[in-house]
Image (tube, rainbow, N blue to C red; front, side, top):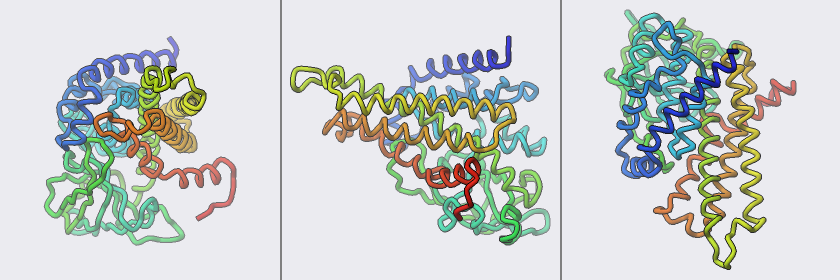
Amino acid sequence: MTIIENVLEREQAVREVVREITQRFDRKYFLDRALTGSGTRELWNEMAKAELFTVGVPEELGGQGGGLTECVALVEEMSLAGLPPMIYPLNLYARSAILNHGSPEQIQHYVVDAMDGSVALCFAVTEPDAGTNTFAIRSTAKKVDGGYLLNGQKVFISAADEADAMLVVARTAPFDPAHKTAGLSLFLVPMSAPGIELKQLDIRWYVPEKQFEIFLDDVEVKDEWMLGEEGKGFSYLVDSLNTERLLIAGMMLGFGQYAIDRAVEYAKVRAPFGTPIGAYQAVQHPLATAQAELKAARALTFEAARQFDAGSADGSGEGMAKLLAAKACLAAVEACIQVHGGHAFVLDNDVITLWPLARLIQIAPLNNESILNQIAERSLGLPRSF
């Protein structure tokens, strides 16, 4: 059996497990938890029970092996059922950096011990003034005896209230324009540490996970909480960001297909003039276009994931995958709304509720314009625009 056949076998096994779970925890459950803010702990526990947190963890650490390809398939399959799993990718972003750069103790606690679902992580990078410019962050970690004092502010941090620890980026040296990537360090900080304050943001995106602003006031960080070496955090961060973009792409592929399937189902039965509206080209063409775009984005996404797992990715495929999957998903959701007409805006019909997440992913975790800048510079060799 070739390597690719092994990957496909693992991927299919993951999809089958996810389908069994989403038959019990469906879109109705997901939306109810989004509207009530009551969380999805039961779903999380079922995922742990089904050993989905072991996917992508090396066999020598007790995991099922495989790589990012199987994890992308997992989030795609959940999103196909209308359950885009925000908190699951958050843990995979962080896990990628920990597996590659963590100490044995960090790997044991945050990867091996976490395979049973007992440890959840959030990812604290974005700051109010810096936005997508990570080099401009102002949070600092000042060296003191036995560790660091962490001060600063983070924003748009998903599921911080459900996390046991956060992977936080802070400056351990002032910004140097001649060496932009220097001076940034990563820390694994328990959420129970004194000096951490959470402020929930009123984000209307119809997913169960909440978003927070985080204030860090003289948080005492132990030396052993640093991930890797001081000042090399940006290079470690890149591992997580490339993982993030492919997982978000997988999520958008599934969510976009979910929207198309909803629209097609409705277009086959809605017949105000006697003929189902699905027979009208004005209805067919936007859906057909979105379907073609999703298929193309899917091919790129899984090719980029395979290259990532093979260690041959150059960073461009991940951004392209996120860009195309996000745009295709939004087109699919827009078409779904148009097909449903006024009924799309009735909350109980659960159609307009698809739009905020699809629209948000055009902006975050990295906005489409920044990805286009990267493609222009890295793939086309054009001058840097900023």
